[in-house]
Length: 263
Length: 244
Image 1 (spheres, one colour):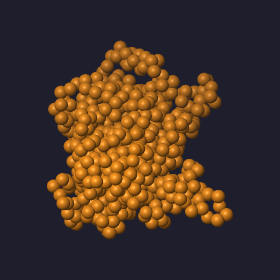
Image 2 (image 1 turned 45 degrees about the vertical axis):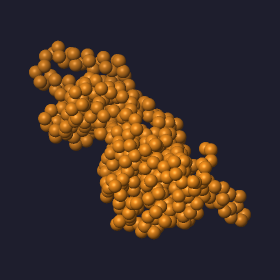
Image 3 (image 1 turned 90 degrees about the vertical axis):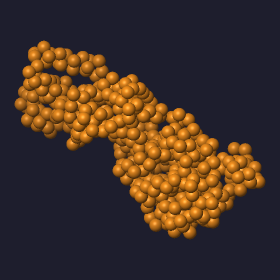
Image 4 (image 1 turned 30 degrees about the horizontal axis):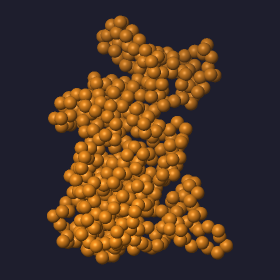
């Protein structure tokens, strides 16, 4: 659950590292008051996703306190968060108590809150022909998403095959090219449905959680890196600064999904 | 022999699985002049159907036939099974941008006082070049240009590309099904000419990777191997295939 607007001030104090994300932070002296930040902070050019993450961490910790947890519990949570930052400073923690999910993700990815879930993505400005358009008048796209995953929590029971229910460690790190049907992490067991053609479409990972709750992870293919792309455009895209190539995309995806936890 | 009835190719070997969302404009069968062979980059016909039916398929991409694969454990389909997925009376979005045929064949007309052809002029790979090249091509008629959605059928062969995006050859069963299907289509639509020799200029069978702006290997081995399989399946005395 994201922090409400009136809690922004508390988030800044609770997680001072978020200040580093402000491009204009240099103009603020350490002597500036928190009220000053609250008043003018919104005018600064900041990275929304970083702020959202700091909010999430703050809410998770406060919620734990509100749920009659002890001071020791709170310390544990704070320590865990610090350890996580120390271990992998380029990765962040996302938690949403309402959805009942948490996962880690690289700080270079953006997070967008959806009605029943969250989209994790990375986009670059790169004009190119849409590889998934085989009409006679192919449209061009201004942006290029080189990572695009959506995690949704459905209130419907969705069945998976008996085979996928049974196998707990099947295809834990399976490559997307190996065509696994079942998929499992340390925390989740599920099934994959492919809706793909010529490098377009997506894979849907379905993880039944209970009789009325299912976790659905939709992983979009990256058409510009698929066989349907114009080779010259594909080559240009692969050399873009900050681009996430296929191998890295796989690594990030499996790391995110391996860290995915549900309440 | 298969019968063409209301846009359906009726035969026990053809499984009807029409996906209406991929059917586009009304197509007069008389306008069908060519067939483009594709490869799906997935593991089964079912995955292809899921992709085409998905609401994410906003450009309604699809083809008229799909030939399934199941010759190895990775492939989940029924090897060589033919599905018809669109009526032959409807066009499908299966081709997209095409290359310039005259540029590929080095036969483009060069206007007086110019050193290069219009087709060559746009190949500077700046933004929009493929779109500009398409506009030059679409005013030409087939066979002066490569086939487009408006005058061709599409056949998809289930095949997964490798990590470099290169397509392997279809299975033997798929090839036999392709040859049978093309033979039946050419009987029903006489405008479609099958090749009688390697690189036959009169052939109306094309690989998508050769005519489109896609991975160059798409459909190529299927089109290249057509004659060999045709000869072996039907025992016809066609000219030998040239070495590749």
